[in-house]
Length: 473
Ligand code: FAD
Ligand code: ZN
Figure 1: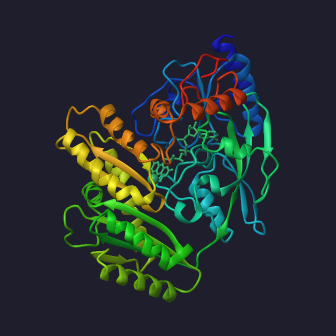
Figure 2 (figure 1 turned 45 degrees about the vertical axis):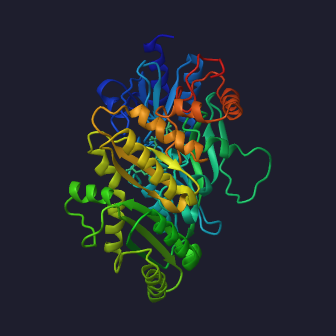
Figure 3 (figure 1 turned 90 degrees about the vertical axis):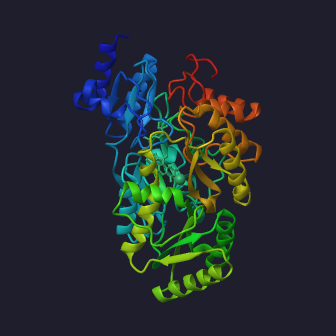
């Protein structure tokens, strides 16, 4: 089929206004980090699941690859097409309706293009909490969150995106619609297809809607920012907070002082609430959610914090006394990614390990990096409660990024960890996956891909290496 013929068929599905080419398509073709720019036949903006299905049938018939895209905030260039201009980008952003709220079942049913923050707001309006929360929540979409199994800051208490989804609606690469929008908390009727699509980064099908879990809104929330001498003490503090708050501990984040200094330098209106801290210090951000009144939350927090200070786990502590102050603490944490984006070169790793191994891992890997690349500067932060660190660094000029990543990932692998805790594989980590996954695991993954997408048209070259159409990748 000619390009003009294909565009004609796509326009027949969506209307001229929603098949973008040329300059109109450009904003969709570069990844969030602005490191990868691809080309596309067109950018498609369907309005509903039927339109998605029609488009998929046209693409399957013509053998055209499809790259799904939500808010395009992903960190591994998974929503960016390759340079061949042979694929279409399928943007879900127009599919942004809340389809239903079921308060007795504590669920909300939303379309894939709903922005995460809009879902949080819709839940709050209904008197419920939708707990998924991450720095990109103002622009990332539920479809993208599910396709990457996003984590964020509330995983400790509520789990990853996977744990928050009860059912999905999916359009297959052949253009069939799987109506799996079941709001069931128990359903053992065979293979769990929902879990196959969650985390598959658009390589198996298009998620068009989801049923999500809702929770009671906490009556009170308190946030504390603590200065801690180092990661071993931060880990002890985490244990103390877990014991003291139980399920009331909804977040526990760590940030090295160097990261926070980058934030206050890049955004001078932001401040650290501590005077002088020793070099090498870290900060921990704790959030507790309480079903009782403010005084109860305050007393519990103070009891745990003063015990932590006495035990030498904390050097200093600042407790939020208002929502605005709590937001300011979170803003510090969430600005780290943006501050680092301004650095000339930042080598990023999104790793997870059993939390117990993190202090040793960081100490030994910092030392190995300093020995191999004198002048390297560490910029580490993350979700200690989940054993997940953004183990980032600023390399000395000329240091080869691939070698640095190999050193870090080899050590993560040796320690039994994961080289992608929450951001996915995309196109950035395809070779790493081949290196670190066992042959059995890779073979099973290839067979799933082959079974669900035999033409190899869904987001080719992401997660698994691209393969000729029809062949096993
Ligand atoms: P996109 O970037 O558009 O796409 C991501 C992947 O999902 C691609 O493979 C794409 O093809 C696929 N996809 C998108 N929509 C669909 C769909 N409907 N059906 C099938 N496939 C689809 N991540 C975390 O896990 N935790 C964090 O704390 C975190 N913090 C972040 C902070 C910042 C400032 C930024 C910019 C990003 C952060 N991220 C974090 C990255 C995170 O993965 C994304 O922000 C988000 O989950 C992706 O959603 P999106 O809609 O932007 O997806
Ligand atoms: Zn993160």
